[in-house]
Structure formats: structure tokens, C-alpha cells
Image (tube, rainbow, N blue to C red; front, side, top):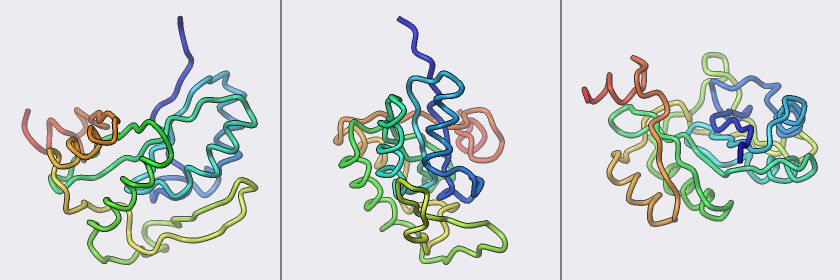
Length: 168
């Protein structure tokens, strides 16, 4: 059985995401492209997953709850979780371990939280594009405890890749 999927998408909550990456736009474009499953893995947050879950449901697309966590080693790890509750639990753990550096919108862009109608309901204050105070082993243990899985996001990329950052 084949499934058309994209398991590494960012929404407008991620500093590297475009402001047009709203829940409805993501789900709608996934449907247009014929995707059956997507994972939206914003940097260090799960804030837009509830709206995305609602939008994906409308389009008949399976949403895999995910976060892309930046560890203390400066490595990006995709964390795929079994449900929204686990994603929000990981979100709280990760956000609590981010340094208190505020986002500078003029440099890093917006970090918007949207509802299922793509209306802005909040903005994430801390800069999400920074390392947490969590190492890879602690992250893997935590995600495993939540019955999720971890996958290196950029294994061979110089910036934030496991091979470059850790040398293996």
C-alpha cells in the first residue's frame, strides 16, 4: 500500500515558515497535491497543530502531530507523536527549556498562532529558532515515553545536521 505524504512541513509559527503557511493553506495545498498524510513540524512548538488538525479533517488528510526540536547540540530532530495531547506535552517541555530570548520579528519573521479560520489568535514570544537546553538523549527518551519517534531532520546538512554537528 502506498501513501502520498510530506512529513516535514512548517507553518507560519516557525521563523523559517512563510506567513502564508496557514492551517487552511497547508491542508488545502496538500489536498491539491494529492497528499494523504502530512506532518507539520514547527520549530520548537506545537501551537498551530489544533487548527491544522481541524483543517486536515475537512480535507480528509491524516495529520501526524510533530515538532522539529533543536537540541543543545544544535541538531534539528523531527519528533513524530501519536496524538495532539502528546505534542502539547512535548511543546510545554521544549518551550520551558528555551532560553528567554524574545523573537525579533524584523530579523526572524513572525511566529503566529492561528485558529482554523486562519485568524491570528496569538504570537509566540520566545525566539523559536534557537537551541533548547535539552540534549538528544533526553529528547529521544521523552518522545519515546510519549510513544513517539525521533528522526534527524537534516542529517547531512552543514547547519543543524547530525553529521556536521556531532561528527557521526
